[in-house]
Length: 394
Ligand code: PLP
Image (tube, rainbow, N blue to C red; front, side, top):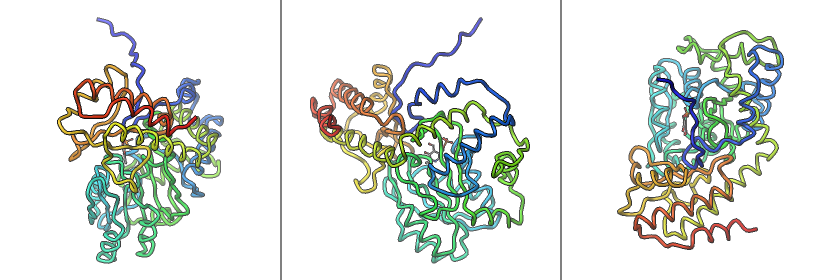
């Protein structure tokens, strides 16, 4: 038996990530593979670091992409900053805060949990109380944009509270980077990780990270070895280096995916970071107009909503999984399901990166309305697309 080449269907990706990959990024991926220590490749690595500093709004020298997905960026932050016996205040208001707790405990630390309801942002008052109660805490960790619910937390305020308590901060910016403001230096964030497959519209499998000088010093002062060889920053930096110095082999970099990532950052620079943020906001406003014209509602309160991750409450009596299957089969459109306690209760519609465009907004509204109407759901028909178009203007 022979197996044929794999040709995936063309989908419109409007779930929680990956988002639609820009054609220029796919083209970059197919450029000739060269060696990972080739001087031309090393020159490109330096450009990636500079472009990433722009995206993160930081001057941190230790800013580079980890050769693995967002979860590895997360592990790199915890594995390097948490030593056995350290206390870390971890905020949880969705799935990903729970993963932070796992990371702290696997590094031999103690996680002091600050819990908020799913769909709510992290409550700064609770964080203040936890840090006052635990003056020996070394780190505050929180998710800026909780992908499982679509809620955004006030990172600036949380980082300021951490500083008052002389704590380092670890921030998850997987879904926020490129979609909403992320200000690493202005907010004083010490360690941040992100992903490429959300608002940067790149392929998955790379995780940009950045560490402040304070974080770098804390890592240098460690008394114990980082328990992960692959993620030990001291070793990785021998390859990613600083200031264009000589590179030592650490691992074979994902060469073509890094071309793709370089292209995605070039695209971001061409558009301008602020323009990318406002495009995400405009597309969200158009989607919101259409969703509400249909009679559907948002799960997260207006003030806390992420423009790039829209959680829509599933109307009573509707089989949400059947709706997603029909969107995929009939319209080649992917939207996301709820996770954990939100399973069956919400859909997650992503407007991330290249997916945040008027065509996708109108396609999604038209297809969702057609499927829901056909299934007999109690919605208003014939208004959603025009409401979104009115919002989009000429
Ligand atoms: N953190 C958040 C907030 C995420 O949304 C995700 C992925 O969706 C991750 C971490 C993990 O990233 P990855 O799936 O690239 O490992």
